[in-house]
Image (tube, rainbow, N blue to C red):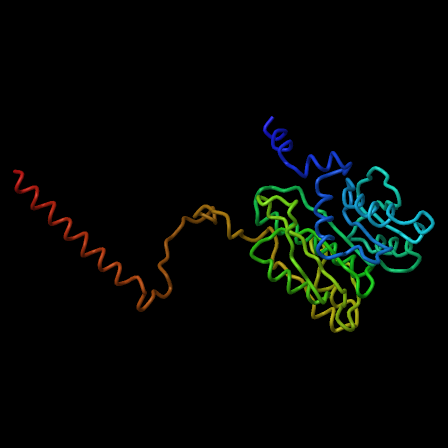
Length: 306
């Protein structure tokens, strides 16, 4: 009941139904285009993680249906997802994994061995509510989308993708700037203020000289090994964050029993080297003095009462 009432109050939810959009998220891409004009001159576009198809629907209406019928053959739009979605005018559906090189090759083949001018991605994981985990998984999804984009996007092209804003947003910005001349982080008005989502608009694709596109799945692959598979020194220099160790190690965010070794009782050990002049020593001395004064007052008060 509560969710339905909230949806009815949401102006973009109502407008999406009135205007025939598959989801309210269509307005996010529309608002981004209103500011950045990402659709100008575009005839080849790719929508990654496309299902259920609201962003593909925007591409269909803005790039395909608005054109003169005789010129529509020039427009090629490819929607990529592991799941199938309902058909849309002018949209070619490709069921594939965006972390696979075969998917990138299929996209280029559909374009007649040409590359895309625009790549968009509104994909997101199932939100857990734990912001740190959600941000991490979303960043891995963004990295996968960027990987395939380096294969299929032409020099000078545009890349738009969803991110979750967090403490590492500035690091994300600096990494994207390696591949694009202009990077903007935007929050469309149709994106709820309560949501941590935002979007990166990366314009003028210009990879470093000597960079060779590689397909990397940071959740499964050995990134350091893949980075050294080519002779390009640039690829070896651009290495994503690598986690040391695995789940067999202790988790610093968990609490463990003091008796880690069941065959031995826990034995307390003092610190190896205590601070020589800790900043809190003066506070400790004041607390001792204050507690002694309060103790003497209580004793004197007790004597008077007797």
